[in-house]
Amino acid sequence: MIQNFNAVNYHSDHKTWKSEIDLYLDEIGIFEDTLGEVLQSNSKVETRSNVEAFQNKFLVHRKALDVIGNSITKHEMTLLNAAKASHDQSSSHDLEYHAGINSKLETERKIFKDLKSSFHDFLASVL
Image (cartoon, helix red, strand yellow):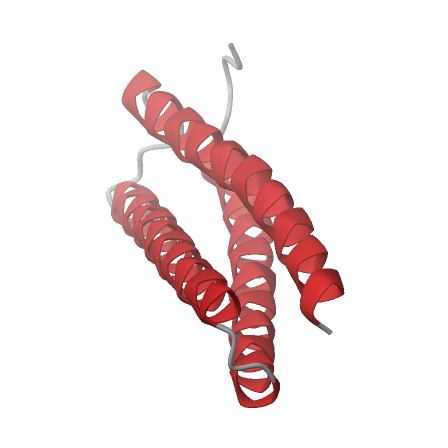
């Protein structure tokens, strides 16, 4: 574990993570638009069912990313309040909370990678 992890280190990670979340959300928006195009050009029941399944998966992933983003914001506010109170070092709770956010984001990275791959496979089969 990191002993002297301070607010600057946390903030740097938070900025990186928020940018990553924004990128994922942008990609999901593009994928959702593409699903609309698929529906317009393909009326097969199986295709419509797959489109609906992907829409649901994107919604779940978007919500999970929103929760992580909110956790990051909450942690930033906690650190800001601690800085205002002149606490130089973060607590072990801060480190654990930070590590928890990192773990959740790592899980979402894996899920998104798999989702993106299966979505591209789906598109290749219908376009």
